[in-house]
Length: 260
Image (cartoon, rainbow, N blue to C red; front, top):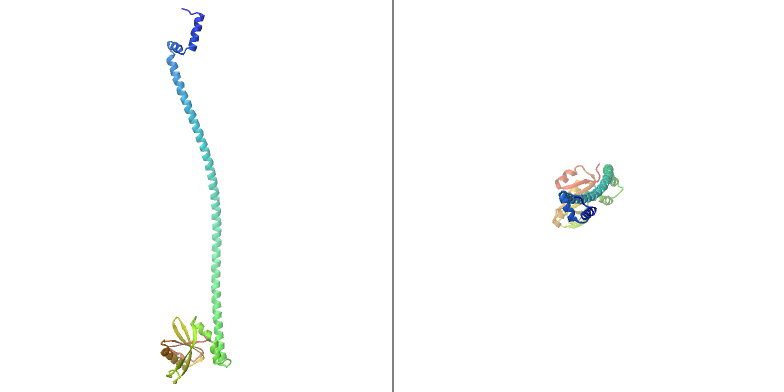
């Protein structure tokens, strides 16, 4: 059976406009299942494309972050390089400073050694000058250039050298029993007190055994009147050779004005 032209047009228009009719016709023709599979494929394809789009967007964001990280890493590497260069320069400067400091310490050590030697030489010169002055004073007194009293006054600084920082005063007392001179008399002597020790000091241009014995008796008087046992010291310009034996027995210290 053949269809007329108007029937064909009606069928084609129904296929285009009527979906159910179209599907029914396709089902009759065996395409319904194919179309459903195609529809599902298209839907899956759509989801894949959307997923791909999201992946591409995520990948783009990751690439952007990676790019930023690379830039930051590059800046960090550059800073690290600069820090290493600065550290290298600082280490080199520190090494130079240490070398200069070592040289300065060596120079300082040499200067200290020179200063020490100069101080020792100066001390020796000062001591030699004092010794020379003492010897000249002793010679001057021996030949009558200065009196006994002048000699004693000039020798006061010798006592200071021997005793160090000590307060020296003149002690006077009445010897009623005649311990010193065998009769009642006034007795005078220089007394220096240092670290609680009382030192009786006599300065003589010439020291004899009689001077040693006299100072010993003055020490006995001082101990009796003050209750303090003193140290006894004679400083002399010229000392008789036989003085030292007696001085040792009586506990009297004898010091020369100058070592000759």
